[in-house]
Length: 335
Image 1 (tube, rainbow, N blue to C red):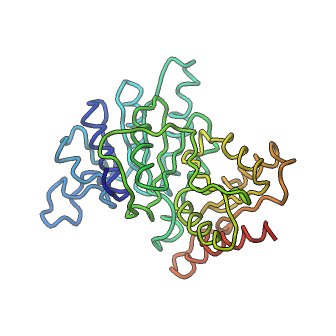
Image 2 (image 1 turned 90 degrees about the horizontal axis):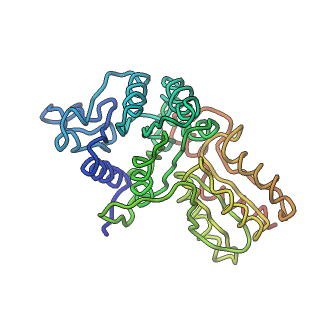
């Protein structure tokens, strides 16, 4: 086991999956690419974030396919290939562009199995760089997983570290249903220990990152590390919290969340997305509906304002939930 960044862990998972199974291929804008490479040769740069680096050189143009700038074409091609037995991994450069291929994802991929009476499968993965933290402004900073969780027929994955990213991506590629894989781009350079060999992490099984008696904290994506920092800092004040990273929002490990809430009686849900119709509201409703008699205080949502993501670094820092804001919310519940 060695230390890897999330970007390198995802890259390793793609290499290993493609070496193991010839039906796996990659398709997207600049996934081979040469833009910015000193040599100008195809294959020198793997995507704008370098996640698919080296794949073109190892597997060639038939399995690492650069496309025109057309998200609908990328996802449509992936959907068709999946229906005939291939296992495509499509890349949509930024999660914000999901609107361009919404019909292919929601009305086609997500409904194939249902519409064909269970006689078909669509083993396609769509990867997205998601979330804020880069001062990329309103059209390149949305997470979008909270929107896609609402649609049945799709599995939605949000890794929070390199270990989870590799195991969840390998699971996604083996899955027979369409999987939307949201990679928080602010975490691409975060490092942790990752096994060199292949392994999978089952969908719908949350990770318990901290254990405590006072408050249950549920966090997604890049908010997980901030929740860890907030909870660790509160330990010196005698406050202990359960911290749950669901890892997948569909399927959601409802049992883990409810069991923890029943034990602590308090719940804080943290996400970088706006609050309306989002994951924080969804999980708050879950607790109110099925653990109401265990609650000792109102459920608190810590999330971004109902506003587009600002471009200014100072405004974006205020927009995305901070460690201090998570801490103060936990203290409010205990007060």
